[in-house]
Amino acid sequence: MTRKKIVIVDNEPDTIEVLKDRLIWWNYEVKEFCSGKEALEQLRRREEYVPDLFFLDLMMPEIDGLKVLEEIKKIDAAIPVIIMTAHGTMETTVRALKKGAYDYILKPFVMNEVEKLLKNLFSKEITKKINGETITPIKIGFEGIIGSDSKMVEIYKTIGRIAHTDIALLIRGESGTGKELIARSVHRHSLRKNMPFCPLNCAAIPDTLFESELFGYEKGAFTGADERKIGIFERAHKGTIFLDEIGDISISTQAKILRVLQEKDFQRLGGRETIKVDVRVIAATNKNLEQLIADGKFREDLYYRLDGITIEVPPLRMRKNDIRLLTDYFINKFSLKFNKKITKITKKALTRLSNYDWPGNVREMENTIQRTVASCKMHIILVEDLLIGKPQKNFSYFDDDKNESRDKNSDFLPYKEARKKTLAEFECQYVQESLQRNKGNVTQTAQEIGLHRQQLQVLMRKHNLKSKDFPVK
Image 1 (cartoon, rainbow, N blue to C red):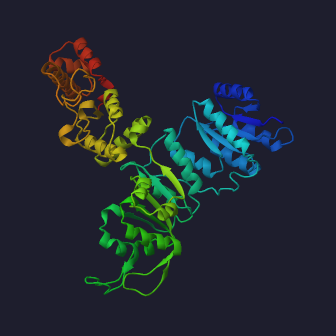
Image 2 (image 1 turned 135 degrees about the vertical axis):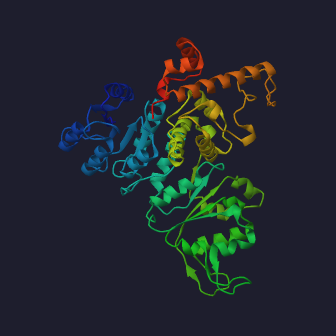
Image 3 (image 1 turned 180 degrees about the vertical axis):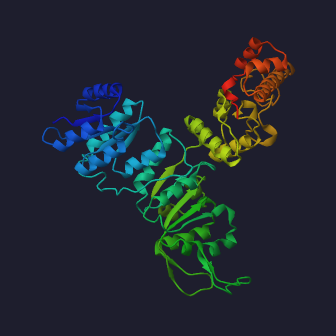
């Protein structure tokens, strides 16, 4: 059997060497290039070396990976390209997939995953087109979806692969995980992107009003119907309907939705005209639909109609690596909103955010950072500034995760520990405010509060405070 030929393109020799050694061990023939320009020149000659696969770095001088990808596809669209990068963002992931990349891997490599990816690729003998079709490049731009965790990267890949189709999509995940953001991203990068996106929160509408919300009504259809109302299906014609919390609707309403999806037409309440409709349906739920089906509370035929492709959105506690990204994003967002100049969060504060379970997921975290930024008096967020959880249970002296000796169900520290912690909090805030008044001048601050300069420096190290954190405005 002829060995598969693989080209590695990366400006980091160490990365090339690590991947090359493993590929050779797996019995692949390998050629490496330190620049995209050299690789493209070789590919254009063709007579010397026709590769079966490219491993292509995203961030390179001269020509970046996405541009090299475009050129490769112009020369030979049949060659699969795997993008590799240390910068795993949604935008770069989906842009690469839209431009024809076969897949996307993050540095540092997990070699078992690389091996599995290659076996899967070559076992399917993908040589002409990816998955039997060529994906047309679409300009990508995303709003508010943050995360480089591997689970999120897989979601970005799925969005890139299905956005241009009309297949039904079911998004599953806990409340606050960002299901509507994903639905909006799918719509914005679909062929329906210039048509309406119409969301409907199924849990917020009484069952008696559901039919009129879905299909609208004619004037005089019932008492109080003083004028015609256009329903969501009609408003979304040629566009996308997002049915959020689909698991909360009644069996009778489920039957009406199923009929529209099957027949692609409906009548307004009190009307005789049959209205044809062309919509893509994206549904979302935080419920266990399989259990609802078993309990007779959800129609199995509707489930299969909605479940063309499923995206499982992980809760925030399952992707703790994204806490830092989300923290920075929300601090910047709300600093601009509230005209604050918050430039930093301390390590202790970030650790506390990472250790919290976030039952309300990203939505809860966004609200937490918003409250924190709005109330923060300094340009740096300390652990004491964080407003996590319910208002009465913000960060307090009576909630120390490190205190293993007390009952886990108790909210109180022993007196001596509480007093010690209270004094430490006062000390930190006192030094912080003193430095702020003196614009970070250590000598001037020490003189003002009656300490030697060295004593103040000890306190600053103790509380992780640095003079550069208090710049002159």
